[in-house]
Image (cartoon, rainbow, N blue to C red; front, top):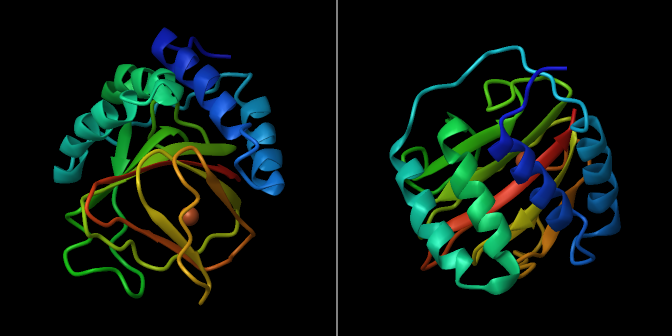
Length: 195
Ligand SMILES: [Fe+2]
């Protein structure tokens, strides 16, 4: 056990509720439940991904928009409080990303390698994208659940683009190819992976 900052404890408490929403697919809720059960024990190897990227500056605007909806004010405030501790990474490869997507997105790690609580047994974080950005197709062995916190759409395999709505979610089976895209407004979603 390591000491967990209060802002991180609060973020985990609030995020857990949003990943338990019945607006997520049941399989997504199930893996999120296991992720948050693991997070009942804090664990931190001290690694920090300290670089900030241009898209990080869009987080505040997304949180202001999100906090306008009373159902999401708690997660907006919890994210704002934990934001200084987030570790940032970018995806730089993958098919079908929109031109400039590398500069127009950032992935924030809250619990996971290089994050606010750096550990390898789970990943809990977020993706920000600027308007009119399409994230590249990607896949990974761990199962994954997303919670959408802005306008936006998701795609799995060669399927149709799907908008789960604010607070809705997506479940990705191991190794399924998936992507997301924004339109006129910035994209913000939380994700968790059962590593
Ligand atoms: Fe993913």
